[in-house]
Length: 395
Ligand SMILES: Cc1cc2nc3c(=O)[nH]c(=O)nc-3n(C[C@H](O)[C@H](O)[C@H](O)COP(=O)(O)O)c2cc1C
Image (cartoon, rainbow, N blue to C red):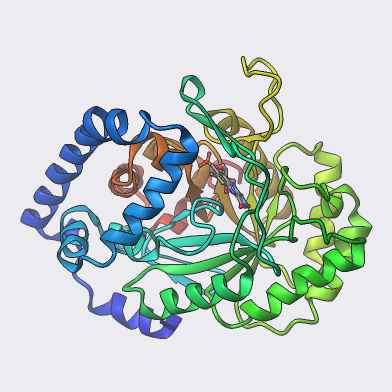
């Protein structure tokens, strides 16, 4: 799928929001699904399993359901809410809506058919690495329902960027509307070498991705690897990395996934480096490392998703928008659970909004709940398009 065909499709499109009956059915089915997820699916098929097993089952579910066209049709017809107010263009890419799956849930690109039919604007597959990678010893996840959070310690397990990018390209070409992004990271295995080896690792994946997805996200902030985070530790290292990545010719825009917990002075130094390179956007941000005030067993390793990210992530989005204006497109990530929170993230400066924990805690129909809710909030406040609301609270 190219941006041009996507734009043409959008021109001919009919919208759920403009058809009384379709809108009513869509709303009723979404409410029913929300009830069913809370009272039947989550207690009996998700939270009754250890989180690592629940994750495996979810991937198997996607694998099976994508091969059942009537189910995909039902998902699309009943759950996919569309509305022209949500369409947006960011970094030259057209999106049916600003919501995307954040990196990490679909590491090997197993979910695009389901997500496309459920109505995501885009998804990020990966993070994927130049060599296939086992990740850290399990458990990878601990559930923290009292904080709407997961403790994540996967360590970049994935089948390798050659395979993942092949799959992402296929998914992008055959998607109805959804855009595909791939997150690339440095391999986390026992062959990890010096800084130059790390840079070449990213370059291999970037060369593989060039021209084959709508966007690339460079993950420099994975908190769970043996090599640590050398590219967020010093602006010089980051500059070296992007000097080499700049040499990889690619037509699609590049986002950089930033850490959440840097002091602002250090964050600015990193962003100043990125501003001098072929980088169009920043994804704000990765997992929360700060456990202060949270009751979490000391021996649980990893970073926190969901609730503990909400405030810090929104503050960072606002700070970056205020300091850098339109130099970077911003993807706001972390602890978005409601349409109000998504709207607030957009008003703080996010062009796009991504999430994972919302799906795990509230179910896949939440994409529809967010889209419908955001459209209502935009209309209430007199905006004609979602892009008109970006950054209004920090101007
Ligand atoms: C299961 C899981 C795996 C993740 N793996 C990655 C990853 O591979 N790369 C990455 O950049 N972020 C990864 N993350 C971080 C998410 O992309 C996101 O930044 C974080 O979860 C905050 O969003 P949320 O509160 O909506 O979950 C992962 C998060 C979760 C929950």
